[in-house]
Image (cartoon, rainbow, N blue to C red; front, side, top):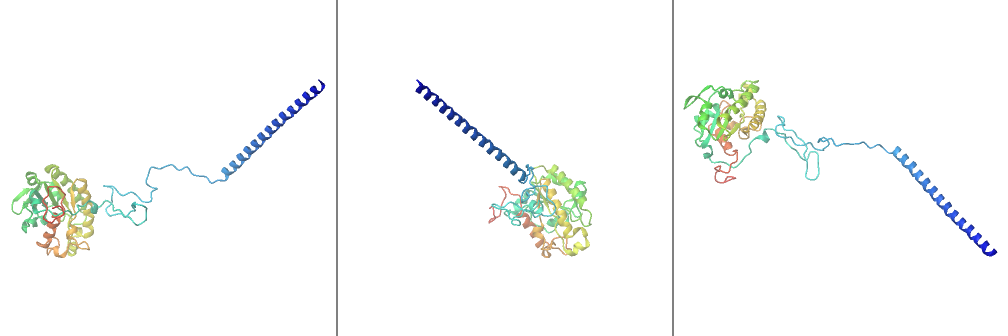
Length: 324
């Protein structure tokens, strides 16, 4: 019994020492873990205090951050073309891509296939003495109605003034056109009105009112072609300050945008009649430097009209033309 008692006592003491060792080990491990967490927290705080601040950037919803500005939309352009960067297919390289502003070069009717003169059979031409030349020189326009009146301007049409046709006599242009109901109308007015500098605003105001009146009289089914005011020879511009190349360019830019806003087709006659310096080609000019010569002048004009028509599937194209 004595030996057994001593053995049992010794076993209990050993068991207690083992349990105490385990508790001591657990306490040490916990202390080490807490110390590690404390050191990590201190280091993290120090890192945040020394790191550079990062601004909170929010999207602005604008295109200001883009390398290249967006191209201008219709109705937003200035009088002169603006050179801007545009997006390239794979990369953006300054100066590599350009987009023109919304000016007359964008608005004008591009070249198409050449129509047969029969295209003008249901057309009418409204204008001043330049248009009178079609009748005066017996220019073939395929049977078109010619309403040319010497000295006429947009105000003449709007105010329903009585005008004189060289073969039909006195008439009111709006009444003649309303009765004829042409399917196409070609307008060329401005040379008489703009001979004096400073008349541009009045001219454009009347021109807009005239387009409204014509649209009301002819309906939406009529295609209205607004032709640019042709250039003149330098000697003629010297006597008529309003007809300088610079002034006519400015007026034609505004006329192009006006035509576009009214749903009309703009024709840039300068492509056919102007030389490299913006003057009427000498070969196309009559002796006065303002009107056109019977052969080259009117020939260039008619050829331009025939190759700058609004496309329609039933247009009669000349043999060999793009669309024939």
